[in-house]
Image 1 (cartoon, rainbow, N blue to C red):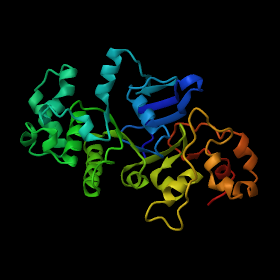
Image 2: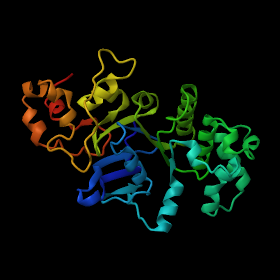
Image 3: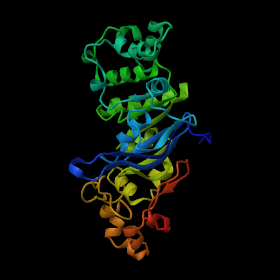
Image 4: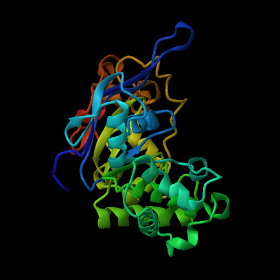
Length: 329
């Protein structure tokens, strides 16, 4: 693992949305420290509603933080239109649904060329579009120029979306559930493409997913998110073969290849406008419910003490009183 400084970093990031009808603000992102190094692939995993997509959109400048900051290359992100336009050449967003990302009235050529035109590209547009499509695995690229999205397969549409990001030669992409809408066979092809782009271009990526199997196949490092916070982070093998947080353990237990019975979490994640006292995972924690935390002498801390915000470095960390007490599952 490289030890170079972060290319993109969330620093004390908080994003709160106003509550309705006088309710407390919803703390969608509640103090996140997360760094992505050059050429590194980080998987951001967690259940739906945990804040992953809000964090991802903030990292590309679409959602300004309530507090804290996003930094790129060590410099805080500015939110003026000119600064954001320059930033988005270097950091590109790839969305989950390629059909929703592509204008049905635009040809493949126009879809990929759109970014070049927005940024006033003065080089050979046709050559740049062809190179991006080729890198995305659509060869020969000229064959796809005049196709419309409805004429392509799901995997081809996702490759067009990726080509639209690559055409600006970014240093990092943020991919929000990039293969969730694809068939299993095509998913493997897109993941292999992302790995090849990292190898060939040195492209870094944040891959947002609920699928820990996907994280295993593609990531260098994993950050597990729950109710607006990173609760466990570390190298992919470290986190996924020896998880320390009960939430990570529960997510892994439901994978088909996992040994033993799955751990079924009760209820849904709490409302982010009403985050529980103590550990935010406390109401659903199987360790607390089973009495293991009581036997370990940390139950009171689980109920009353916030485990805190993890630092943004690459070392293995966990926000859990039980895990920090040295207890293993």
